[in-house]
Length: 194
Image (tube, rainbow, N blue to C red; front, side, top):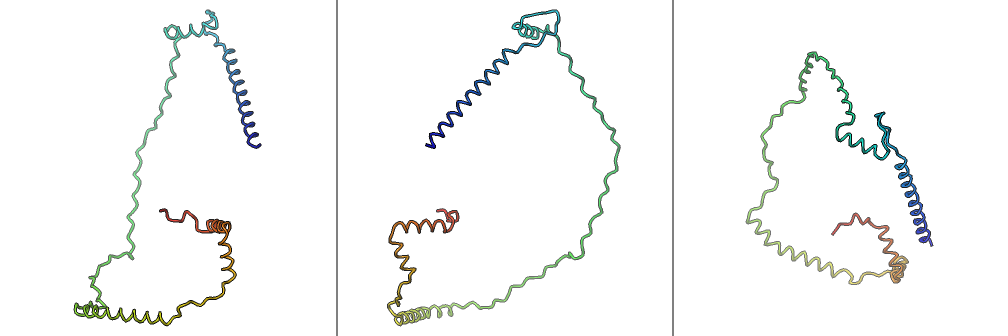
């Protein structure tokens, strides 16, 4: 029903607009018909209204019409005599403050190394025992795994967990949860674009 009123409103507006436009064009045509050319400057000649502008145009093109008055002379240009002026005094140079002194560089010495690089023989010995150290570490980790109980202690599910499980069983609640996560979650503009 609202769509019908909207369409009807636009149709009425278009009709009113067309009527106003038609009235304006009629008024303009009437103004053009009522227009009469200005009276001729020559007092002795009388012509009909339709031929007067044609005659004036013919006279202008042939050059027999009244000549146009000459343009007015340009205004005189007034210049002032320039007097020689004194040059602006230059400011005295600014002295450099005494706190800025030249810095002399001192020779840079390399810092003494705190640790000595191992020799090739020491590195070889360390690498040879590395395998044994790794085997011992893995053995300790396996012993620790045997000491722990194989099953985790189970406790009774809390009310929150039971409620969450019940909500995940119905599709409507899953939909609501997804919508809530989009609304309350991180803005999409901050997600990286892939």
